[in-house]
Image (cartoon, rainbow, N blue to C red):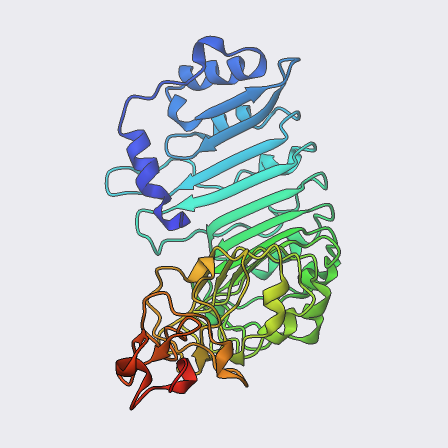
Length: 395
């Protein structure tokens, strides 16, 4: 779900009476926090709170719709918190949140392992910013998700200090005038999950070095909204990738760079400028379940003939693409009008399944002829004048 749609769900949640799901069962630190929020009449700003077996709060969710600075300080005063989700809500025509800061207390959580920060504005294009230095969080942090911001170079510099980070997902709106560099992140070597989603646009010359520096563990890579048009030879190092989504860029050549990525399960390269033949090595990728090559300049050659492939998306505009085998699972019920691939020996065409014989439907069964009208059968009507010997027998 796009984070600029979060407000709809937040507004809905706040429009009904709020009941803390486990309020009667609250114990330990969570009971203390919930009681405090209840006393301040802002219970809806703490939708989740969990404790460990010792009653220490370990996971908490907060939103800023009604929250006050006093409540923020209270909720984030527990150093046992390992998981934190904080949603900053923008002003609406009917309500203006009283607390609009990025809570500085987050930096004091020395046991924090997962942090999710998102902004939900009244307008879909509304974004917020995070002050310089605010993301210099505990080095225990392993998972960081940030959404709905306009990112700055200082934010990236701060993230680079999180040397144990394994999961990084950034959703931001930056135009060319708000460009920044990912170069500082190259010192991070443990990133197994990386998503960079720019709802604005500015050009990246190549995949950020942080991906290549984490080549031993990186298995999930997605980059959008950066006009990537070049994929370097270093792509070969990312052989542990299982998930690759570089859709919506300007890439011209990449398929040939994926020749040693046998662990791939999901590939989305749609909405690029790829002008390339489909390499045959995709036929041997046993883990590949999904591939989307639609909306490119020209995908050529043969469709992927991989029996494990469940979803394969091409584009009807590709005039230089042919189907290798219509019985492949992912091509069943498709609407593509490609011809069947021709080989050095046209008898290598698959047998027709509908009685029609041509380059699209295939050749006739053994002993049958293909009539001049393109139908399989026996007798002079099929095997006589006009019989098409490339698709069956002829007298």
